[in-house]
Image (cartoon, rainbow, N blue to C red; front, side, top):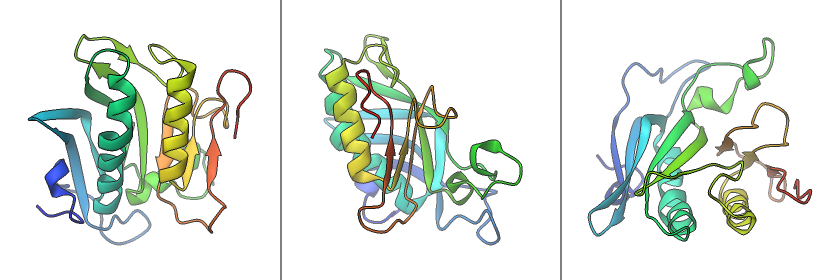
Length: 185
């Protein structure tokens, strides 16, 4: 299945039972099951992330070009990523009356723990990742996505990293993740 020219780097299949009209419509919904790295290597997403095709392509590029090198630098190859959330028709932060979440349009992805070949786990809270590695992870996410929310951002993203492709005016992206030493933005 071609998905914005990125099919060579992704294992995707069409997402079923995802609305393509209405408040929680998703343009070209797919299930991103894995990212192909090369040399027959893949990073599995569990559960598969249900996203718009364009979001899946952006996540695959981020994993391949940024997350894999950051994780591999810890001494063991990245093999799996826990998906904390992907498509989910709900209000922001699950708060009644709030604006619709980007998750409801397949534009958002929540990164959970990453697993290495040696079975070690890496988390955005710092388990297995140095401060320098988390700084690289934050910089790459903020460069690629319109919204980045992590620990210290708003109380709803303390154990995962939210990234989304919400269109924002140039220079108006949201990049909030407090790293040790007080680096919030």
